[in-house]
Amino acid sequence: MFNLKFKFIFSLALVASLTGCAAGDFGSPNVYQPYDVARAGSLESCTVLRTRLVLIDANPGNTGVGTAVGIAAGMLLGSQVHGRRHDRSLAVLALGLVGGVIGQGIAGVASRQDGLELAVRMTDGRVLVVVQPADQAFMPGERAYLVSSYSGLRITH
Image (tube, rainbow, N blue to C red; front, side, top):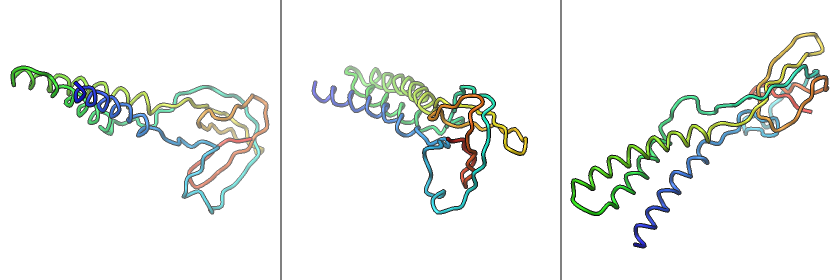
């Protein structure tokens, strides 16, 4: 009984670990990557015209990691079925397929993050739209700064 509980908990831990694999930076104004450090960037003043909440999907393509971990967890659980060899084989196959679908779904949801679409007017009159994580709040009419770095554009206070 202990062996079955251990394998079940281990399987759940495998699937839960997908959320750690899928998390990403997405260009936050509060997070810099190693390749941004010690590189010159530029800073321009701008005015926020509007903000809109969006959803950022860090993994639009299926890398297969979630599916693979889900299949492995499902097959591990299926191997615990007692009975004839044929029944166990069917359980491994069925739970492997179900685990793969669940793992793919978890990876898809875990790779999403709330974001902001910011429309800003530059001092020269140009209007730019920047999408970034919603980790800073902005109001229309507010003065802000457009930071241009090696990794892209960010709006910050």
